[in-house]
Image 1 (tube, rainbow, N blue to C red):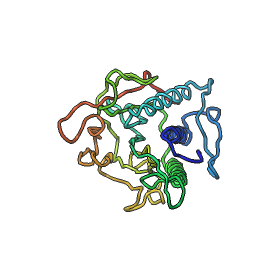
Image 2: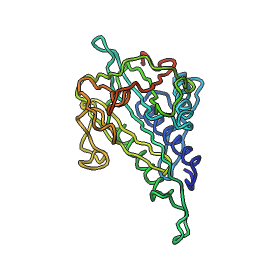
Image 3: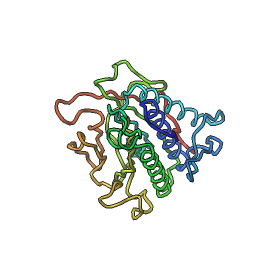
Image 4: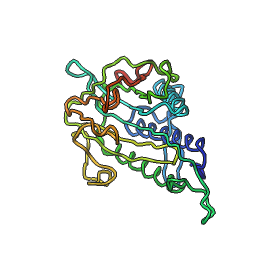
Length: 286
């Protein structure tokens, strides 16, 4: 963890590491790859399993490639959403089992000197220690959630999608390992999906939010300290939660329409640029 976050470059390094840690946590705790595909790192008392390029496991190589593609979009400040889907084929259509959503925002604030305390602080009041504590809390909640989910079915397929800010992203831009998305924007859950707000981290330059949507029946224990009534982490039965400008959009339970991601909900509707991997992963998982 960086000792200080006083520049945009230091901030983007942290956000990239948080994304890598989060994706590694998801794949490790869901049993997608063998132990050999992970290295061990420590953040204070937290023992973290981090995906690495394991040549004996093509799946882990592909995931690392996708993460690096997202890094490229993050550095350019193009990507707005990073989605991880785990789905199976049921009743003539693809049924989503779990959806992991990472939202990114880019801020224009810059650090300034606090003359009274003679310390470097961000204009929005975020200091490096606050960012570290928020990061630790996010990671702990994600691990806790993974421990409270039922095992994945064997016929699982994993894929990812990147969604962009149209006003700054070139139409022909595609990060390494991705291509233009040609699939419809509907997600089907076999059951009653619930949305979990895992947490967020703000550095003063970047904001990253993590949310998980899965079927209610797949959560072993809802009554945990991860789910707090009226707290920062809560379950919503309104489908996929939206933030700020997207919250006026509505979604259906049986068919979660990602209108807030694929199109602008407020004002004239326009297609949002979306990328998908060049090839799928874990198809027909055993």
